[in-house]
Length: 392
Image (cartoon, rainbow, N blue to C red; front, side):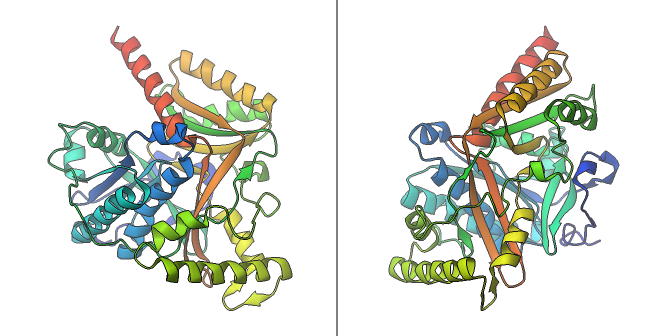
């Protein structure tokens, strides 16, 4: 396995219930880098009702880097208000360039401040962290990186520490526009069928394995989110809602087609007309087959992933939500885990479609009104409280 092709040559797995099998995670080569980005004061944007814009910028970081470097070579994790990617040494200059472009675009078009850094993995390991990866297969040609080792958490702390980030901060101004082809946000918010969309972040402390924690949760809510149970799926055909024209189409045009707005409007209008025709008639139009696409879409979402901690977006009833809070609260009090939770009534989905004919597309799912971003803030408060209790 060559260093540059570490991720593309990594074997994949398809049983998500085995996600916590530590022995199957491979260490990323020491000369790789973490591209870290998140939106400053994202909670202010959430309070102003702009979480869809926040999500879109976070997904733009991933889309830009993958378009430039290749989606099969780069591990990434979407965090709601930002993203983390791990890139080979030979690609770090190009990755830095496109990341700078997203920073500039977010500032000029969205009026959002995206802080970004390029952090050597070797430095993260010097701080006591690691980045170990598995490749989870969603469907043919589509994968998500599962990451352990606390390396992403350390990268996040560095990114948000004004002193620690100085050697690595990305400060380029007026960078070239990044390649955002395929980035879109055309689906309506996904309503909670059972009443509540729960954005969850869970990290065991080591006292109890993740599988046991999730088994305890499954006993209370009736299904295990780590298994391929239909109740853990959000973006199925019956749950999706498309309107013409999409409500947030202007957001997509301004971000993806910033240089040529008129051409951008023309292009997305034609694409949406084609989609509507194929969606409601079932006809195949060029490479687009609605039935096939919708089936793939239900598989190709990141509603469950591991990025140092387990991140889930679930549709729960009031009774199930209460049970989740009880299980996690008791486990936290016992020192078995740290968790963060945010509840809303809808989920948001942002899409990155590389090649619809070849089925190459990924869909980033998050709870509305703050989702994983708010859950992460709550997670950090509990983590600090647990650390303080241990110190005392």
